[in-house]
Length: 301
Image (cartoon, rainbow, N blue to C red; front, side, top):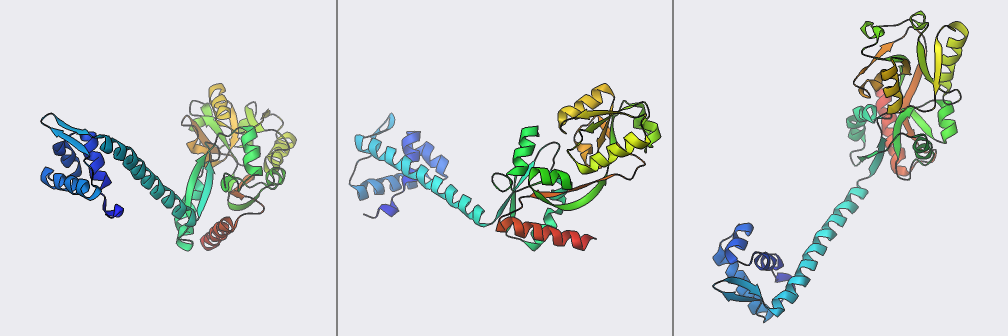
């Protein structure tokens, strides 16, 4: 008797259905063929597995024992296959990309097809996180552990403070986010003078060099704009801005964050570099990914 030839699946289906006909239907075979399989199994094992009667089938003591073990074997085999698939996925080189409402991965996703053309064995897995001050600090500080890369502000001061490095994808102009119910929502462009007497929400000093540059310009040259500090970009800041009809310093790619807000360009020369942030000591896989992204960006210039 060769244990490898035992049809555990057919036996389990019959045991659970309590009927050859029902089990045969679930296996898409005839009941006659299924009965032959079970008869052959009992013959090979030298065991009677089922009590047969006009009321249906019940397991014998031997059948009950085999059913428990057979279920374990089938389940274990299925789990083994899943583990093998997971191992294969790891071998195919996974890049774990962090994403949150305020640090969306969309800009990176736009580059992904061209990156994949150059590194076809690379795959990505999106890892969502909440954009709290603690998360923002810990995730950037520990890139390479649970998350490999994120898309965010590639500002030199920010990266220096957070202990990470970055590849700049684009320089986005700093603009104003306004509620669609704000009088400015009808405008296609603003001037700094338009903002006089308005509340302009801007992140606190020392968080980002580019934001500090904008702040210095406004304080020196446009003191009639009321600057309102906040600690961290998150969805709550967008909600507060929309509800209070204030203005918020933002970037155009954030237009997807809040459906009730509009991003309006401002006539000033302040921009924000946005890019792929990664560990200063990236793994070999991340190094390949960054190198491929750099080649894509070079070719797009």
